[in-house]
Length: 172
Image 1 (cartoon, rainbow, N blue to C red):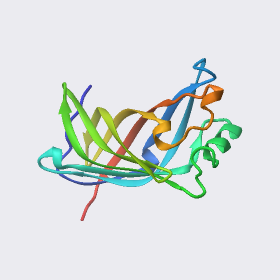
Image 2: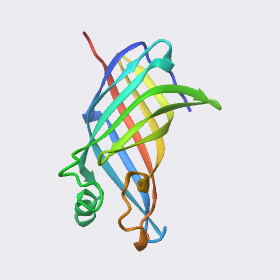
Image 3: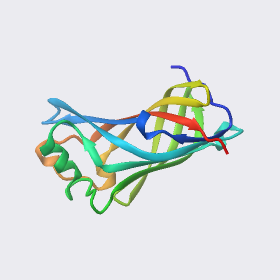
Image 4: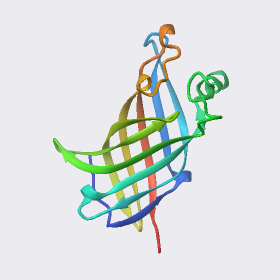
């Protein structure tokens, strides 16, 4: 794990070079389903001290793609994300801290107007020429966001969420 704090400043998330992946079990844990979401925008403000930094991101709920049109339509439907009425999944955070030799980002994830605290482990960062990349992971309990449909059919409760972002230093 290699985490380097970028220089102080405001960075704009680059949706074209960022990726959000979600993976969870299906069919009573016998198979894993992986899907992706598109990032629509966001920013990271790196402060001094770094613990005063903040992060914000917006995710297009209707962009969910797993390679199965039937599954994708179901996930975007009223039963799950209800992306027509809730087009954005948002993340806001403001507390970066180190614990047990790991960097963590605590924030609030909002899905379908339900906000819950989450903590992501920052696994690595890379800084070069006014931009930085970062990879962070967390585990999401979908029932905490009211997404309970399908549990009786063996749908997984927890999902691994991986954020791979590229952020560009804003020139103001």
